[in-house]
Length: 308
Image (tube, rainbow, N blue to C red; front, side):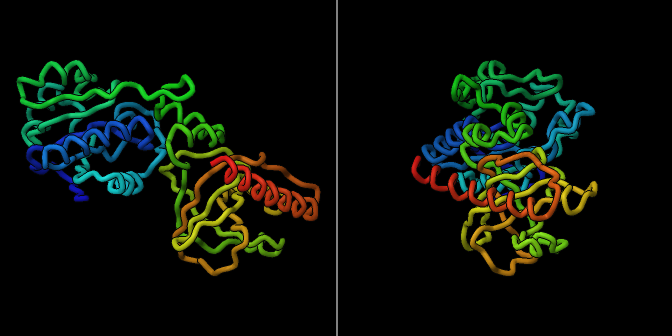
């Protein structure tokens, strides 16, 4: 996949438009349609992305992302998108929809097709919409495809719904809507070695500040070390029993694993929440609970394997 950090001419494109945070199941229908049209017409698919969430630019709201930009690009490449054009939303936020369509989309991409979700908007004050793109098909010589709502368990799949479930620690439902397990990534850093002294060595990473935050607690996770995937239990919190400080830590005990992975990048995928954070009366009670957490993970692993 080619990545461009400014407008560039990519003629006869099959365009997919949207912010695509999460690249959830509904997004994937949009993207796969753009890819299908490109292959069918022997041309290239293209996605236009913005670095910042539009609401971060238009309001005082801080929208934390399900995916970082790099993670989003990695998934787009794996899906088979040919080109990704990354723009600064601020530079285009005051352009009227007609101007954006004519002077940006048509001028630079001369699209043979444009695919969006049913609720896609663009242009100043959201003037552009599905009906607007449909109405201008003949004028600008492209075919417009509107993808209808993607529904699971009577819920329309959306980024806002997914964010709300992640913020509650409900990864069973959030992952179902995403079509994959929500994940974080980071380089393993030196910790305080407290977990090792307890008999449960852990890998510490820094939680990316741009990623949506999960509730404090203990989670059953999958850990990809680059060469293999392992089961693990992750603690996201303050360590009230042994630390009693105000510094949030992200540390994961990788089950049946005993390798030095300092400075290695790992990927941690969330499966389900085990429990809330607890302050124990003493270290022995903490160690006993960690053993129970590991047992929970092992049991849950077999439950998942038997339900594939």
